[in-house]
Length: 536
Image (cartoon, rainbow, N blue to C red; front, side):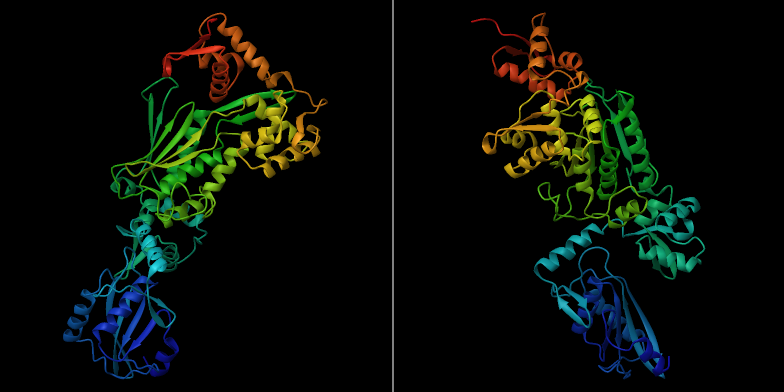
């Protein structure tokens, strides 16, 4: 290069360029560590502080190369290193090219961690060090290098991924490789475009099998069966697994067909968007290094349980997952988002909770198991019946109802007279939120208020009525159960079938009758049944 060309290409030190005049072990180590912990960069040996080649770096001969590698070998966990010689108007410069470290955190030989920021190599301490370590642990699998090159990618899978990532199909091979590298699917090694493990998962049909049990395994359980009666495996790319498993489970659960007047309501037994998000998160955030475990889904009439290998990624825990966000395999989840199979960063858990609440389902649970797996449970059963859900949907034509409002309205339709304390207990909210819900329903003409302030009570408006198909009110339900018990022992299943109640609704009803002393529970677990209490 001419001096003018060199000055144009490297006008100053920056986040990616550092100049050194001599071969100082300490300074070279610090530069390599700082670039490794940032986005990589080049260290130019033999250039002064003004950016002028001085020749002090000497030609990159065997002795200098040996010395430099000895310095590099004293660095703990550096990024990939390459050594080059650059000549500027006859003056030799040695260039040390440093790539971003994909796993772990680089440190100097004395244990110092630094990061490149602007023109400086700054020490990493405290929260900044913890955050970087967390990121690098997350990057350990999907950013790693696979054994496949981009040339070995399946053409159809490549076309699908490019379409999802909005990469033009008419690009040159080099531009395509560069575009995929920006998205973490490709890395360049020795002049060759190699797939990362994330890239291989999406672009090589046989790759998931070589990484272990990288598939979704679905087990179907009948209500009273201790063992599953069907097992289905969904393999292929992560996108194919999420899409196919979600569709199969949704079809298996089916829907409730409710006819209200002339309208038909097909009510899915789980919100598809919530189901898809949970499966997508399990596939994306699983620990792929636990190669002997698949993502497991257990489907039963009561719930869908999704079990993902690997625990929560720091700083996420079961207690803060609504607010804290982290990804174990960032490139996998980013690709699933591009396919429209996962929500934007930070929205996934919120969407699951919102969808379940909107569908009047019980709240899902998220727990880390002792063996290092995460289990998400989506309750299929609801505290309200399908008929009540359809009725609430009909009323939304009159007013925009929040999920909690609909639950309150259904309770009122069952014949309850509601106070603020009743709504607080029903929705697990504070007094202010309970009051707002009641007042919204009152202002919409769906509830009527009697009394004021602490004495206020709310009931379904007389003109609205309670359609017969909504079911019996509480008094009617209790009377019906006692009538059944008068004819012989009854079970939860018999009550559900007779009254059209969900499992939890039947449980609450029966427990209430036991607490009142009019029914007695006998047996345990599946053998439990209820009989009328014998007179004293």
